[in-house]
Image (cartoon, rainbow, N blue to C red):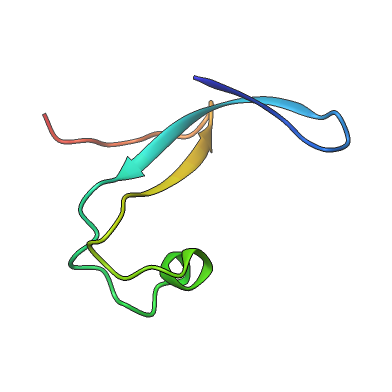
Length: 58
């Protein structure tokens, strides 16, 4: 869990999820455009709120 606080003081608890192998992703994916990186070069991470469900392999 990660504690997040917005500029307006709003607080939230979230889970950080990182995709470590992005080599098969579409090079035009928004994440690569925003981060100015290419697929497979860096992990892409984002936050999920507490009420989201995440399915992960064993």
